[in-house]
Length: 269
Length: 172
Image (cartoon, rainbow over all chains, first blue to last red; front, top):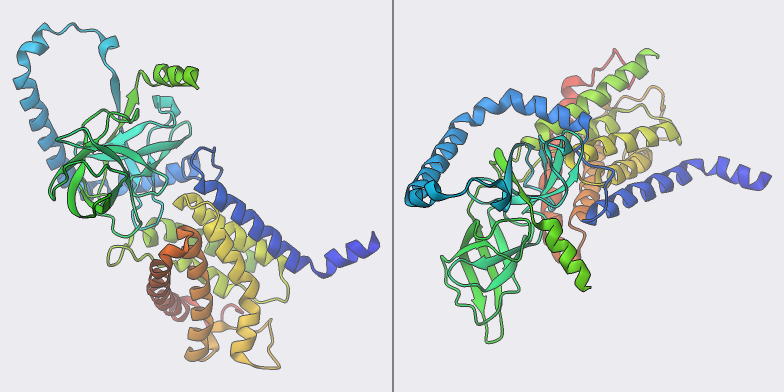
């Protein structure tokens, strides 16, 4: 026993070094798994609060582009409303028929230069956010909520290797999954799409109906290049519709049927 | 708290805030963010086998990780360079009568400061990017990001050492 104590006393510097490294590695490995409540994240009141204050201080720098974006979206919605005006008048006002509800939020910390990018959002469980909700803006898909605290949440950006989103071609129902290789924040990749799918450069990619997180048909980007051999498509590069280095106001998508669908799928297993 | 400890605490908080609020938003050439917070490791007083220093560096790295959602990547890298710091310094200076208490990084020659800060920065960045990408497929990206970011960090750190590492007031 005494030998052990003297051993620890003698090598305590090295032992502490090893202990701290192991601890740091454990945190790192934990952060790489998607479905685990993570300890190290910025959805707590200290980091979230700091980012929120900092962000509100610098909001004015992006006001102009944010206004333009809102204006554009309003025009789009007005046009859509006009096309469907007859339907809207005769529509029964019943909130239970609405499948998706949207919660307005703001990204207070953006990240796009890392391998796995995470965004911090200024809304939390108090505002009805839970994990596995989609995050979109007026142009495109942004990410998926993965951690929630009372007032803040973090979301995996689409620029994250854990974020695999079901995506399909706009003109047909062939689908694949969207991933990111970590190189360019304007370009993402589309994987696992069938060879039969008619693919052309410039084709629009939208969110697929298999995803429970996003409404069907939200734009993701356009095909900028791809290779094909007789068996499969390779290296399908997608130019993202939104500039991930400049995202501000977003909507968090709540799927009201998600629990019902999950319950059904669970019954089958 | 002694004067030295309050200075170190102040420097800790200042560097963390500077890192997460300013440095992490620079995105020079689209992806370069210097890690200026390493200045804390370089300027911390020297002592043989200082366990407190390891703990403080662990907390420093972890604070950065909390803000950047990166698990324990920065903590692992910072503890590692804290562990080898004194060894590297001894090899670079190659001096027998190195007085740890009176040592002052600022008064060494520019060459040895560059070597000392450069070696540790490169090691730190290599660990950070290796853990971040976590696969050999991305070896080119890891090396590319490591050396470009290292040069950026090295430049800022050496500049700060000359600007703020006062020569006489504090014994560093």
